[in-house]
Length: 594
Ligand code: TEU
Ligand code: CA
Image 1 (cartoon, rainbow, N blue to C red):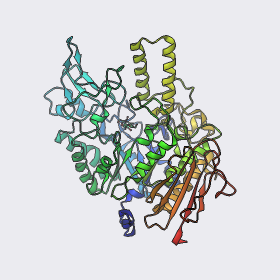
Image 2: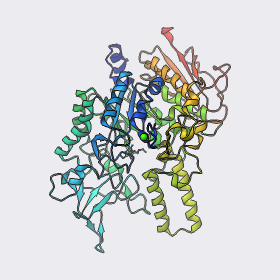
Image 3: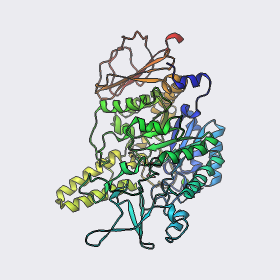
Image 4: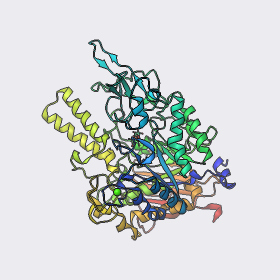
């Protein structure tokens, strides 16, 4: 049965964002144009041809709005102006035009669950209980325990390992912040507040010509307004993770329909961040075209794999079969309906994929990066690639001291670990061991890994800046950098270009095809077949996820006549040679078309 997409494509009527391949930029660490050590918009503009040459057609830029930068711009103090070190509104106009002139679209980051505490709305809200904007944020009176001590309204822990409520001396109430203390949550039940969010954060930029938004924490706007306690899952901690209570609240769909009506006027796309939403049915409710809300979402099962359910920084390990099951689930959940899916394995909140899912050992890093490039570019959905991923950047070295980690998430996590050790009266030796383990966890999955400056070349500071970089450059920049790769046909960068080219050329297979997992229990090799909706094109992808050679035999049962489309490493006879360590191959069978 032809899917909706194949019919839509036949009539030339497919939504533009389904064909988008999207490059994410995190401004602070991307490219510095003026030597102050901080990336900026002119730096981005200077590399638009580099991005275009990758073969992507859309750019998403993480927050570049004015902000005190407590959470690297996810704490916005003014939606309608630019953080001065990054540039000006004129620079943004230039960037929008620079993208459009090259046939690329531009997405901004829409962060509207919370603002900065420096935003004028919050400044007014906190000024008095009777201020007209008091109700634009979430204020609650204190509770008192049996001893008469003041306590927050409930036991929720913020996403950054602290109490989710902060006491305001001036007006003698608590305000809610699901993230930093400096990121108060907006009160979405207030209609006037919602209207002003839409105008200031969305329409202001849509009018300037941006093509859509990546939407931060999109399922957290609607909270249970009676604020029940979260179940105690970590008895050592005073506060408890409460995501299952504040994600996907009662009014979520109503708010998103309001936003969708505005976005539709501009044919703008959205990709919403959807943590803690494991059921396909719930995800479909957000992305079905029948009831327009979001174009697509980021579902987090893949990047959360191997992390503790309570302590997300803790490494628990995982099997390849579990990774396959996750990919299979989110590849196939759009079958037989009008939903859409995304493909991503990195962003600014995650460790580098080479280090997490394959191997960053010097002898394997290049092959691993190509292996993962092959995975990403052959999967169905809108594909995202994060700055530095295209050259195979890796996690920071394990021996960096904690002082090099600048992310509030890493810093607060270490603080919490130390507090818990104090509370349990651990010995000095136990403490040292636990702190060391925490550092290794931060090194593996901490957000700092994705935030080191982009490695442009082998000059000092990796060519990111002529000044002093705001964050330490990864020590391996002399080996891993864009300049060394750009003219090398065997580089990771050239491989990504080739694969994105193939993805674009054979979009009916790779972007739109159906996904069929082979050998789900195989713990060494990840194999799958992609089929075009018309059924006349097929691809077979085989990926060796180990550092050992693996036997390989082309499947023959279905009579397909496979020929190699692309491999990650040179091989004599790709149809029978064992797969080398971290090697991948894509075969195709163009059936009736040949
Ligand atoms: O992140 C939200 C967030 O913390 C989760 O979605 C998390 O990434 C997920 O559960 C995967 O493990 C967003 C931004 O991406 C982040 O940089 C900000 O700090 C945060 O919102 C607050 O705006
Ligand atoms: Ca700069």
